[in-house]
Image (tube, rainbow, N blue to C red):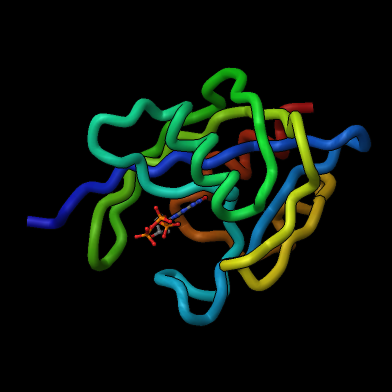
Length: 131
Ligand SMILES: Nc1nc2c([nH]c(=O)n2[C@H]2C[C@H](O)[C@@H](COP(=O)(O)OP(=O)(O)OP(=O)(O)O)O2)c(=O)[nH]1
């Protein structure tokens, strides 16, 4: 049976109403696809603490989590992902990629120009229709 992994990802908007998007590197699983920053929830960890930890590790900045934006389950070839996106605000620092290949701030209407990890498509569509 395929394993199910619980993943949290941050929807972070700047003062120009742009959304933070990061590009998975060629060496990562699901390579060269855009995603929202975040990662796997560890055993015994709540989703908000997991997201705060992942953003600090990946982007070296602090966030405050707000409300859950959406939740979607997607079946990949090798595993099933339960992806929870959470609206968040940067409270300290500015995001810098270390593991990812690139970072951009995208206008909502341009989000569909990026090649997204398949599990992210529902969140992307919701964001594009949000305003
Ligand atoms: N962070 C993140 N991962 C996503 C998204 N969409 C999506 O399919 N994924 C997949 C890619 C990975 O297989 C998995 C998250 O694992 P990860 O590698 O980013 O997280 P991690 O740092 O906790 O993992 P690890 O390297 O410690 O094993 O979820 C997304 O929007 N954000």
